[in-house]
Length: 103
Image 1 (cartoon, rainbow, N blue to C red):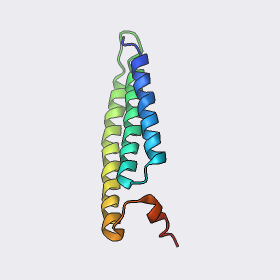
Image 2 (image 1 turned 90 degrees about the horizontal axis):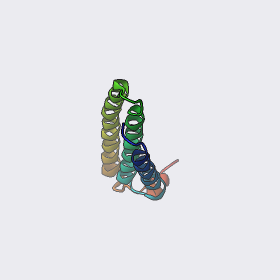
Image 3 (image 1 turned 180 degrees about the horizontal axis):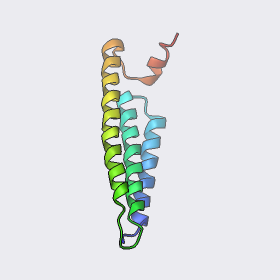
Image 4 (image 1 turned 180 degrees about the vertical axis):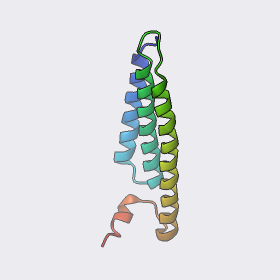
């Protein structure tokens, strides 16, 4: 059984980095990177907690994380497609400038 503390510290750091990316950055690509970091933190936490039963590793957690990785990839792909369309149309990726385009 592996100690849980290093994994939880890594998850906490990833959560802080992802949330700070979402709060501070103004670029749409950097926002997507922050979302991906948050997804990876959740996956790491789920896997780390699944190994805490002595002598047993839960395969259900691994299968759920594999599905989450596939879904995360599709979310990021759709987000990058949206970023490309926004850049082609408005020639900017700055969130503050795009918010001014509201009706």
